[in-house]
Image (cartoon, rainbow, N blue to C red):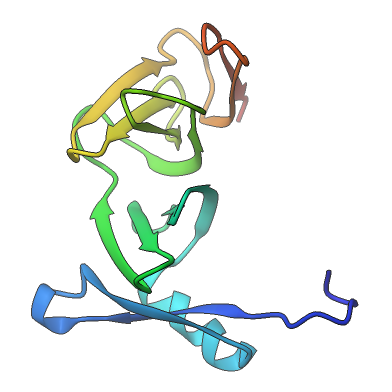
Length: 159
């Protein structure tokens, strides 16, 4: 990828101060220096990424933020990820294919015994799917679903 003949482009967020920087526009830039400065301001500690049609989702651990980018309109919205029973930082993000509930699942990095899996639907409602009390785990790192959507697979990482 990096050594091929293609063009490498980087995300550059342009938050709108009218909306307290919680939304705005974005562009793709080939200027790596410009791009490196931008996440330090608006998207620190980026992890976990998923796409569904024209929407790109990712989380930022450092500030516990959840981003949705509209790839057609070149706009974004960010939400706080530490809501409800979610005590830690967002880590990975995953959609279930053909989910009629339209839930985006994300894993949590927290303190021993508090990490888990949480969900957010298109109405901005948050759900706690599971937590890890009784386990001395600090991070839920991986998430996958069976093809028939009857099983969820989760990895709990020890400190």
